[in-house]
Every structure is written in structure tokens, then in C-alpha cells.
Image 1 (cartoon, helix red, strand yellow):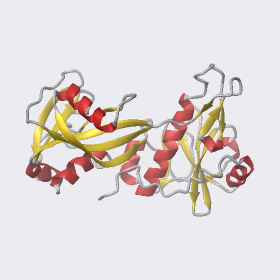
Image 2 (image 1 turned 180 degrees about the vertical axis):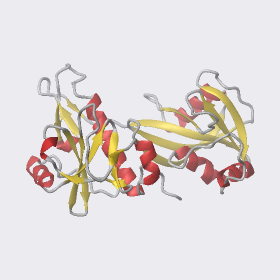
Image 3 (image 1 turned 90 degrees about the vertical axis):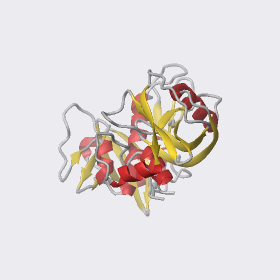
Image 4 (image 1 turned 135 degrees about the vertical axis):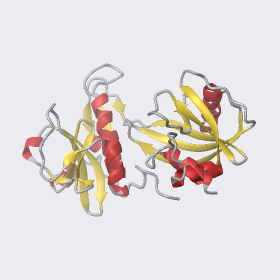
Length: 289
């Protein structure tokens, strides 16, 4: 199976060591740092632009990513409204960068983005409202007022392709770019299994009942911090009805048509998901069976 973007992170996260402040300080002294600015990683020569620490970064939010062999890697979030000028590269939006970065760099940058974004959003204790402090290289925040501990969150999202025979159902969300059709998706709710979430979302979005749900693959998705649970669901009939609130259109797609569209031999205005999305892999892997 072709690697899915943002997966395959090669770093040793050293979770058993990062609570040791002295060890972490020693890693920081010899570390390389991936700068971020306004959620954008620094990219140099189509690689993640890791740099030695600079004195003018003092006070910037910094998280430990892990060990690349013996090399400690960190990410640092640079403040300010004006884009910092660093030699050799530029700050790029994460989605476009994922098309040019090597797979390992995409995964590492995705990890960094998700961590930094969580800290940006969770500077205060939800228990008492007091400002919290970063610990464990960015994998924990502690409230000095009430003692509560808080950990980076990952939100599970089911993304699924209903299939029946040699056809699958694809849909067009109101928020999609023009002409894009894709798999269906939704957040897993409290007290709900992955399979139950798949069935509920398809019932809500296209009024479709499904039988067996099978897991295919997962994808870390740092926008801001989700884990996409890729599934297939066996449709019980071809009948469907769009909800008109989230989904504005849906249609059945045959394997032959999917293969032709993926190969670029059908060139009308309809678009399938881009290669960095797990929805692309769900459609492609099903079509190529």
C-alpha cells in the first residue's frame, strides 16, 4: 500500500525520557529546530528546514519532536505579524508543502504543527482558568493553581466509502472546493464505536443503511489535530437521499470509472480527492482490487 501523507513518522519520540528536565535540556543544546510561523513550516530546498537554535528565538514556544538517530529534533513557533526572514527557504502552508516534502518530512512537520497548534489553543486550564505551563517537551501542560494536568488531544474522525458490488458512493460536501467529490466523514462522538460512527454518519448525510464496516487505514491529519479512521461500509441498497445541509450531491462511482479518473483518461470537471488525502487512498485501493 502506498504510504499515506503525514504517516510513517520515523522519529524516536523518547517518551520515557522527555519528563527528565536535565536530559531534555541536554537535547535542546544540541538540537535542530523546525521553525513555524502562523502554522506554516519553514521549507528549504523542498525539505523541512531544520536550523540550529538562534538567540532571537528566546521565549518562543518550543516542543520536542524526537530523536532522528542521535540527532534531537524540535519545533519552534516564531511570533509576529511579519514573516521572519530566514536564509535558504520560506514558510509554506502545510497542505501545499505536503506535495513537495519527502514523506518523512511531511510526517514530522505534521507532528510539529499539531503540537504547536494545541499549545496555542490550550494556554489556560479548563478546570480553573489559570495559565498553564508546558512540561515534558510539550506533551503535557500543568496548572500551578489547581494541579490539573492536560495532554495534547487527537480527535478521531471516521472517513468512509459505502460500497455495493463494483460501485461506491461518493459525495460533495457544501464546503468542498468546486467539483470535488469524495468519501463521507464525521467526528466520532462520545460513547460511540468506530463502526457505529460510520453507520450514523451515513444515515445522517445520505439516509443510507449499511451492514459490515471494515477498517482500512488511518491517517494523522494536523488540521488542527485529528486521526482519520479510513473504512469501507457495505451498503444494503443503492438508495440514498442527501441531507441538503452538509451534503449537496452524491453519486455512485463504478470501479471502471474510478480507474479511468485516477489514470486521467476522463477529463471532465468532476474531481476526486488529492493524493495527500486518505479519501484518495480509500477510492484508489478499492478500485484497484
